[in-house]
Image (cartoon, rainbow, N blue to C red; front, side, top):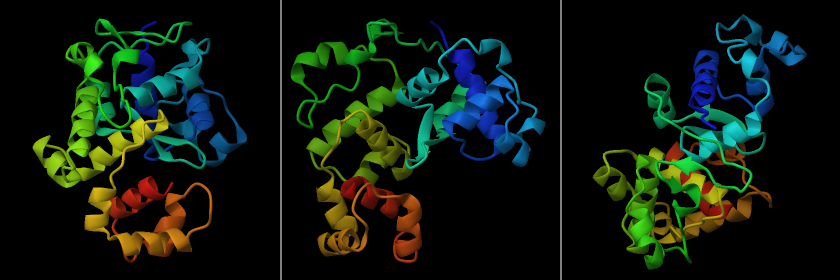
Length: 239
């Protein structure tokens, strides 16, 4: 099922709200459900409130997940799964393209190939057996992720890779985090040891509570030492 309209409406809500929103809040705003939290934050006064009220039969969590896979949304806060849009999502709202929801078999139509053929990772590398399939991938984000995997295999500095792709390190980190959500962890220690330092990384590790690292805690404890990109790198390698 084609869901680009639903994704575009989701992005419109986040843009108008001017902040990341939890899945529950997003769905309630989209469907025009008046809740205590919505009234408290005056989200019911948004122009986009109820923008998708005729679409309540859909599984919105599946739509949000599909938008994340496509690189149009990203998780801003892991703790409460706050979602926001990416630069690609902002472009998508202005010029949507076809995005389909997975069917019951776990597959979905995507420019002539199944999503299972996208972002294939075997022990941190792109399996050569999938080279032919990967050559047909048309998603720009997927292409960049494949290039990123190969760059990391060759231990290319992430900022150099970002420059070669005419993007920034923040976008590369978005790609790494998106892959991590799907169980694809890359070893970027060669880069973090260089830009942050092995001993400094261990110092941060020892100072943080056990369990999943929270960006808010990292900012509070280390925000005066590291910039936002360095904090995101620390969360990635220490999580």
